[in-house]
Length: 94
Image 1 (spheres, rainbow, N blue to C red):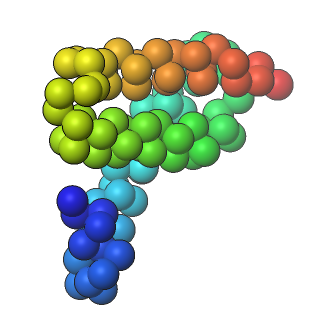
Image 2: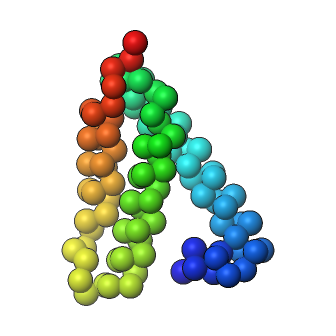
């Protein structure tokens, strides 16, 4: 896994950190748009994006390492529900 190599190799870490930063920026923007459209506070978009990114990375690792254990196709539904519930639970915009 790339994350494991990033822990051991500084040159991999640099590339991996840039990739994660880009993914977080995109997720933050998308969640911010969703929060705004729902009339919710947008200042929670970065932490929500980090949680969603962690869910995605963990789901990928579990699915890759335990192909016979994790239910097929669960990750997309889980990530979507996480995002929907996070937006619904966010504080209302003032």
